[in-house]
Length: 357
Ligand SMILES: *[C@@H]1O[C@H](CO)[C@@H](O)[C@H](O)[C@H]1NC(C)=O
Ligand SMILES: *[C@@H]1O[C@H](CO)[C@@H](O)[C@H](O)[C@H]1NC(C)=O
Ligand SMILES: CC(=O)N[C@H]1CO[C@H](CO)[C@@H](O)[C@@H]1O
Image (cartoon, rainbow, N blue to C red; front, side, top):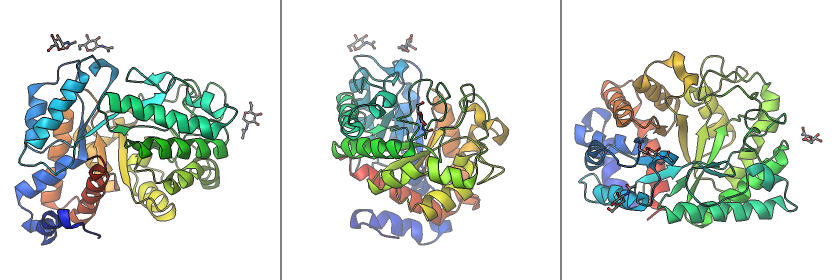
């Protein structure tokens, strides 16, 4: 493992041996892996306490959290974290879905949808502008991670990803070109991009929504690689910092687990075959697609065990994030979550956050 000088003492403390990691070392470490959410305009005081205790890696912002006061609220999150004894030296991740077109949580660009960008006279130039516009809006609201671009390659007009024009194109080449242009432009402006939803959500029909229920994508491994995963090769070459996994099941790759709970998909395809070295993030842990995989804590732990670095507790309920945090804590102490793999994930998260300072 490559260690930066700044992080060395921290990792030496962890590396001595798993059992030697004291509870407070673990507390400092685990928080980086959990993203929280809250209802309405006023974050609960308990969320600020959890930030002080080092149990929060970041916050996801929804439309219901947006008012003229949002930047003040976010400043307060960052200030609270900076004053915490668990402060890591870099800011909390503040993330949102600012995809463009109809899917925008913050007032501001990109005004055009991904589909419109894909149909532009010069899609690559249009996607570059789109990434710049997304970065401007996020920066205006003090967000530093965009859960975009969507790299899903839609199949039929009006299907799940095309219904809201979230896919750049039905051509894998156009999706790869636009996606990587968006990523380069947005990340050059200092905002982390998260390409989604790996290994691809372009095939589901209009009513197949993983937020609501289990979805199975019965494509061959050849088609998944050639059509759905190909844009990730370009995104990774463009240096994308983060990749979000989907919650669909891909029987050709793993008959049991949805992508974000699947070691076969995350390790074999994304890490080993495509060579992604950045941060992995789940989709919403509360998604209906995961109904068969236990409560929020159990789902979060399964995702971490599969190799997902960041768990997205986006239920607008602070307890959800706390439950996942506690499950990771217990699993590291009893050895059911591998300490070395988890520490490597922590390192990836902190490397991405250091760019935000
Ligand atoms: C925003 O902050 C101002 C000043 O602190 C306060 O009066 C107002 O109620 C807040 N508005 C919202 C929507 O929270
Ligand atoms: C994409 O859609 C266009 C217009 O409907 C169609 O002509 C083209 O064949 C489709 N391309 C692919 C790869 O399916
Ligand atoms: C746009 C939006 O969803 N606004 C909501 C913000 O949160 C308050 C408080 O929960 C709601 O009343 C608003 O409807």
